[in-house]
Amino acid sequence: MSFEKRSAAALDYFPCHYGRSRNLFRGPRKRMEGDYVAFLGGTDTYGRFVPRPFPALVEDRLGLPCVNFGWMNAGPDAFLNDEAVLAAAQGARAVVLQVPGAQNLTNRYYAVHPRRNDRFVEASELMRRLFPGVDFTEYHFTRHLLGALAAGHPERFAILKVELQAAWVARMGELIDRIGRPVLLVWFARRAPEPVGARGPEIGRDPLFVTAEMLAQIAPRPASVIDATASATALAAGTAGMVFADIEAPAAAELMGPAAHGEAAERIAAHLADMMALEG
Image 1 (cartoon, one colour):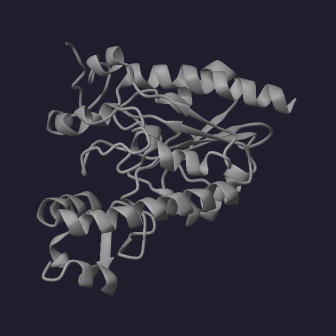
Image 2 (cartoon, one colour; image 1 turned 30 degrees about the vertical axis):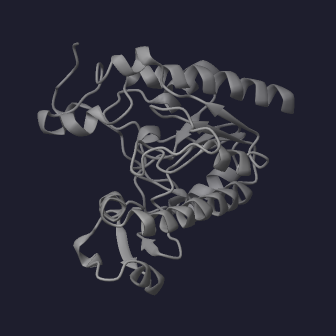
């Protein structure tokens, strides 16, 4: 299997600001005049290591500006706390929202950084009572924290997981309501959503802890939900076509490659075209 391992500096993300947002998004910067599509999501939407991620590919297919508001490890809180992104989404012809995991959001048990949602900030008193004796100062990232709790305290962790899933459903519903525009919710992952009642590994692949049942709970809000699970062929392509330094190879291997982005773009573009045709 061949892949590119040029210096990461060779891939220019054309970082840019929109409005008063403090975040740097992937460019080139787009003019948000007339019809455009806003893409909200995490690391895969941003397209880390990918020369042309699916928002850019959808733009090719639709002929409409597609503004990439993806950023690393973003959960729903990142967008709810960014008025510039919300305003851009509210002015869009349509919005594509990649399904995020349930670990990177503030809940009754712990708080995350309002912009860098994978950063664990502090445990609540409720969390400390649920996990007595745990030194939470040892943890700086949500996945590290949750992995340790799942391994060391599986029964108590099950309680926390239920809270995270409930918080995810509520927060995603709030985000979609705030957007107030047609939303295409996209499952872009290495695995399909687990069926209702299924019990997968506690700490598995993204989107973490999100099930088909959870998607069904918010499905009445977005215009539609599509499954853009990567095919076996796309997954077999691995990091082919990605641009990264040798030291970043492990991180690149965990992300979707250009083949998966191409498949997702085809599905997203087709659904967006149908959505906008129905609107007239």
